[in-house]
Length: 419
Image 1 (cartoon, rainbow, N blue to C red):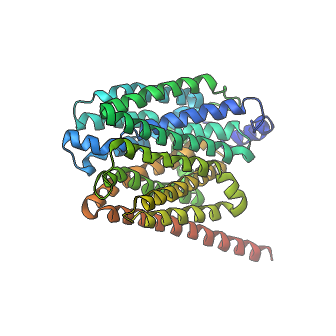
Image 2: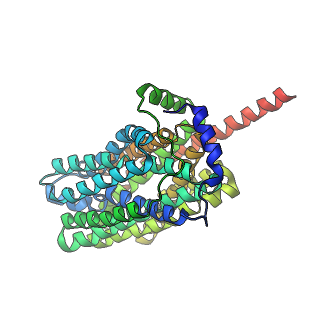
Image 3: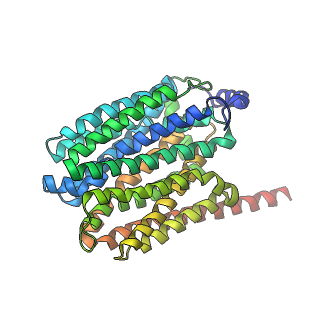
């Protein structure tokens, strides 16, 4: 890896040539990463809407079936850091392409799984394959897009995540209702193949990437540096806690809606994920929220919205449950976009590793949320799952409040030192 001073100088020298809205290549870049984000989330959570059907076929409990989601997100969390290091050597574009290609190939094998154990293994491999995409994408954007446009660009990538998550669950739900859950997974695999082709065709070549060497000591030093930065650590914890809420809610919601008093069919349950469109809007609006409220103000708004949605979802009215899901989704995607873009702006060196650590925390939160949410649902019904979400929400508030108090204390010390 290059020394920090060399990378900082290269970034400064090339800042005036990086892309911004309206510049040639910016639209292609945005569309390419939108397609990648769409495919990644569609693949990563492809079994989530199908969990009741998978449970029925294999005679598995909700917590056992939830491992088809948690294994994928957990493997991604474990592999994202080493694969981000490869992107420092071989390039963001190459790493993202290889990652998405491997994930699509595995997606075409997943529907053939003969039992729950092999399905979980294939899903874990798929999550590991996808690990090369998110951190590399964040680093690619930080290098190729001007700082003022970075939040909006990352927001669009996250919006692709939301549409991918929505469309993947929608497609699997309706296809599964007609032809079974295996056909639903196959449909997502074929759709993701088209997205991968579009991504590779549209993505511009990197103009500001400087390859480094695969030096484990330098990598460890970079990681230690990021983990010693209090702001980055707080952002990692916030990302993990937001995703704990989201993972718990959307892993379990299918089980709740298939039971009384709702008793909804599989296709209708899949359509519930149209609510992800709210996440698309919330992600794209994250830049404006930060501009008006500041980073912490935007996070407080996001977490308040999420908490209100959790409480509203306790109702036995379908309309109230859907409204609660809307609020949870909007709050989550806004909070995620703010936290992830803040990581990219805070890290001046080793951006891929900084983003990788965020993604590790984020997807570990997803795995924890899915597993804990399913266990809580088995023990206490939907109220148990909501309790897990509210505990995570309280954690976000605590971390954000601590950051606000720390910033005020530091500012007071600087004023005293200056006087």
